[in-house]
Length: 221
Ligand code: 5RP
Image 1 (spheres, rainbow, N blue to C red):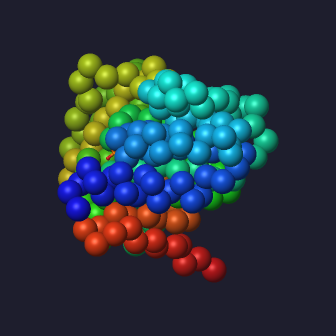
Image 2: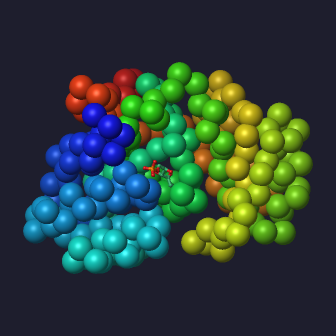
């Protein structure tokens, strides 16, 4: 299966988790295919909460109702992609810049289903530059803090997040303890969110491989 076919297959497989109620929907090219698949079963769900303006537009184009997260009491499932993911279901996310809203929806959802193609599965996180969303006035300070931690931060050019902030893409990190680094970076003044999703990892990973879609479920006590 080519990469595009893998994305389509995994998007289709995720429909099994979207049975009823309001569905949390992330962002990115794999999620776009999930939104297209969701449109085929839209009669059985109430609607969706979207992690980005782009996803909200696509959902509405398909006639799927988009809810404000504040008006939703319960979110049973959140479906989103990843830039990197390990077999522990820790992820780097934020390649599309929507990391803060994605992390909020992931926190609310009872079940996080990560969908990706085989190229995203890694042994250790960090080859993909870690996105860090920063308040604009803190850009230089946070950049220096990242340098101190061995990263090479690069400002994402001509880019503002949906929240009006900047992204530093931090190259050269090897994340041996993702939950600890996630907390540490979130404690740097001026950081809104970093793209490590480890304290609230995915519950289920659907990974499309040349032979089909594999399901990996979190092993937690
Ligand atoms: C956006 C994300 C996406 O989930 C991530 O970038 C994966 O995108 P794609 O499916 O296009 O590879 O975290 O902020």
